[in-house]
Image 1: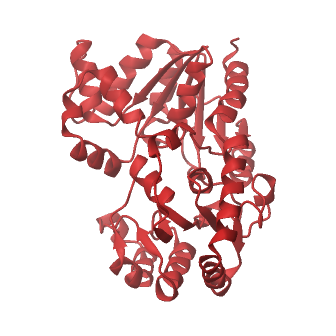
Image 2: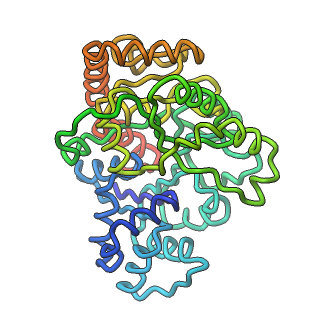
Image 3: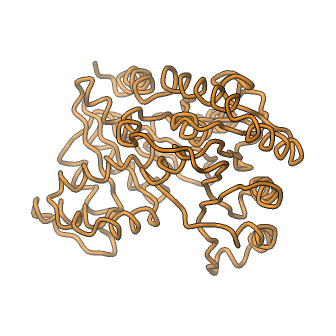
Length: 368
């Protein structure tokens, strides 16, 4: 199978990565891409690399990494301009690679006419999303959607689109890069705090007020679009105490290092999850060996066992009590964290997801 991953990384992450590693921008395309992939931002690129290990021809496009894509253009005599490089260069990359399966994410700028055009150069297009897509979004050219939530899958199927449920996963090679770190952070939260995370803000605010919670998150930016949302201002006011104690967001290996230093780490799903568990942070926290605290949700026991592999809570008071209890009983916390890590490494690693996705991709792409 020839698999090509068309992905974008958070712009904030790319800015931080290149600022911290200024020499990487001058590297050849292949070396620069490997340096980015070795920082383990997101799970789909890691799964794609595992599929390459399984004998498939795999190409990974990080479409919005400007220095990387410009290196490709220089080395392959591809014309480009800064205003459309993230569209023009990937089009050439897909045309040249001719994948059996093109795998992309919820990158709306590629949906519609652009994906239909790329479909001429591959057998199948598969897209991943962890959020419901706008009902008016053009899904033409997509053969199958992947999502981590059953409610999203039902919506896609009602629109006549094949959809398969796939959970995120953890890359075990991250642990080799981490080495031995002291668990010197008692309880942490790493994640977004926006108008779409009202319940998350409430939980983080409660812990900030009553425990030693340390927070790493992006400060909200006020744009014309966000300023027009009443929900944005409500969330900003609700988060005012949290933001005063928030440290800059962490990504890639920096995020995993902080989780590996944490005894406990908090997860709160966004409201769009619809009361169902399945976000990436579940597996990042358990994979890094911290004790995961997350909301009690009806589907959670299907992939991690509450009470023995993670700790669940119901509401702010229960969360505060649980944090205080496990900080006072570190051996109990460490035992649950270790069990959670074992479960994630044995059932929710990139090795397992690659095996499942290999079969799906070959089926949808009609290849062997």
